[in-house]
View 1 (spheres, protein in one colour):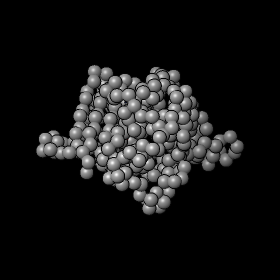
View 2 (cartoon, helix red, strand yellow):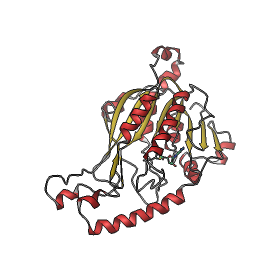
View 3 (cartoon, helix red, strand yellow):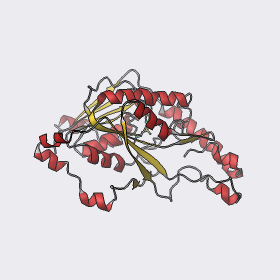
View 4 (cartoon, helix red, strand yellow):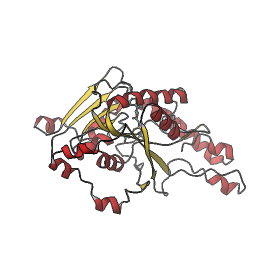
Length: 319
Ligand SMILES: C[S@@+](CC[C@H](N)C(=O)[O-])C[C@H]1O[C@@H](n2cnc3c(N)ncnc32)[C@H](O)[C@@H]1O
């Protein structure tokens, strides 16, 4: 194992002054799902405020990402109070306007058996006529951007041991079909006692694949919306350094638990260096959000028992 370092900064990611220019080799992140009723109700004043966050972040990202490297967002269009917001295309537009090139879009397909939000498709069962169609959503997008062209001659300068350790496992690549634009990966299931409760966490398999596909051992991965710390954990396990930003100080314990941070292993000479920074612009959000989500759920429960007209079925349903 080569020693790695990990920095977790509690603060707003639109300011990443701790990171030097051109020093990040991959960004992988899932931004808050706008005002998703069951995750982030009323987190943003309006959609423009959300887009401004993405725009400000994109500028910082362009500064910190090394030339030729990749920024990948895991996200989806969002249905909030009956209106669908085109998050995927808006982030794409903002990233391109900020200087990145658009490289790919992968559809992350979740198993059909588990749909977290209400089944909108049921409307047609009640009203089997045209115009009542609202499909159930079982996908998100992984949108991939690149900062200029990658200089492949860089690979020749790497230590052969690093190159060997960074080799992609072609058996997995084929059998798990990494080579397709559709990745079938089970989402984080909503067990009551899961560590990520109340956090819209992505499965570790997503940052793992992206880290293996786009970085070499010993390089540095950034997640500006760290949540429960999934990206840091994947980077640490794969011998990459990492920097994570998270605005919500209430998530500190969850992150430390996920990355298995414990004072004794650190002081007894663990190879990995972990630094935690609490900036004055960090906030405490979870208690407030979870209270709001609880209210939201009881409203939806009441509505779904008397349902189903097309209008009530779309209102308050996230994708
Ligand atoms: C969708 S979650 C990320 C979940 C993460 N991928 C995981 O696996 O746990 C988005 C996170 O972004 C955080 N966040 C929202 N606005 C932020 C900001 N301006 N700066 C940093 N973090 C922010 C939220 O508190 C939330 O934890």
